[in-house]
Length: 195
Ligand SMILES: [Zn+2]
Image (cartoon, rainbow, N blue to C red):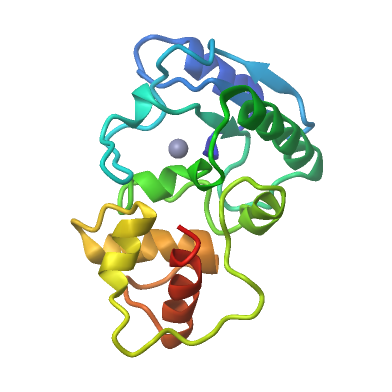
């Protein structure tokens, strides 16, 4: 996630209030400071109404990491450094499969855009946290079914344009319409083969 809040202090305050019903396991500041808000085994309220593959209660089976970032600014290098260290620890401790490092926008298409198009998904993928498209992409075959591919990756395609928008934000790193250009389609074909 990105927090879309003004400061780390504000985020921590929000997460310790009961009323907003939001919380996450970790919050990482721009300076790289990691705050462990909640035991990893406890259920946090960070996913909301969401779906990934066949799972619709994401809060019960995921670890939420919030990055102090307003959503329209680059992620700070120190923050990314801390994130990579944290992800490496979590991946090892809980044996998390490579495919299972995803964004809020992936599990709540049409409702949540975070961590957004500025999040360095490719850097994460290079370290084994999630997948990303290869540099060289072969064209998708003519009979390639993009809706089935999105569903196989994990997207809820109940609202297909929203799912396409979420996919593009993550894997093409572009905002845009809920339709696929030939390039988007080729990226989807490339990514889908990894799942
Ligand atoms: Zn979020």
